[in-house]
Image 1 (cartoon, chains in turn green, cyan):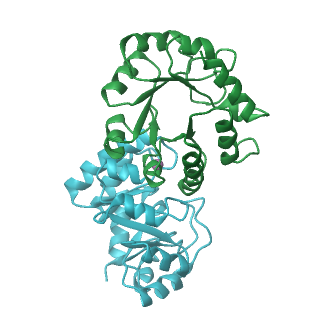
Image 2 (cartoon, helix red, strand yellow; image 1 turned 60 degrees about the vertical axis):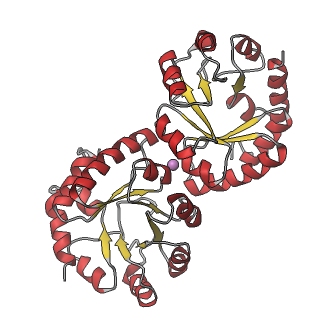
Image 3 (cartoon, helix red, strand yellow; image 1 turned 90 degrees about the horizontal axis):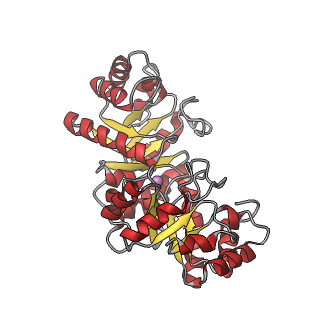
Length: 193
Length: 193
Ligand code: NI
């Protein structure tokens, strides 16, 4: 449950609003619950034609046949994550610096989660904002898709894309919105050039 | 760290005292830390010829090439755990009732963790003690090895084995002991008939 709504409802509304990928991320539930949520999201995302990515838990990603997994710097090391996932599933890796970005690309990342771009209250462990400069810096050097994360809203999403991000990931802006679908719509409109 | 000692020190002392398997179980650390602890334990357990089992995290078990994984009723469902582990790694499943024991055996458990036998302070989520009768009940019907867990000490270990357990698993009695090796020795002596 997120703010009184089920994970499935929020995901469904976000897809209505234009989300093209859903990330299952829940640090506070048992693996059993994560698998159950993941199975429900797998059914939904398959039906709606959007990607499903599981955060941290490669085992859950494999168990529910997700499209891929995302690992942060405190999660499974990237090389091991790639080995467990195999070559065909999507591996996303968080990068909060150019060094981390280079290491992630070398380890076989299919995309990078770059951030936090702005200050955020969505993740307690998110660290200091890295700003738009990191996005531009990586985009100048590499072709790996960059998903910007951290404090992104309909107001600033445009400049994030202009800086070189391929897409944006949002937690707080959509999940805590009164109208999830509308919030996602506004974000989708903001990044459509 | 457990009570000021590293996971590796405690495991090494427990092996000195006669432990034949080490279970990596740490609910409060990142996956990255779990992998690092697991790699160190893998090296130790290989050198000392004892089994290494990872609790809950099948991905970590595979990543560090553990001998197997253990899942509880709140972890990865047993059928999925078996599928991810493959046929050759050890799958242990917790059972706190005869129904759970039967389901676990049907799902392909290589051993059952049965308990909590006695009241315990080692796990906050351990539930009501099931006593020795569950061990006897399962042992009468099945040949699957039964590892008794929960409140087992050098004083009561003998009767647990007599009831039909193949072995015992201890957290509190060894990890919190002043002398881990001695505590493990006393337990090992208690269950040697
Ligand atoms: Ni996990």
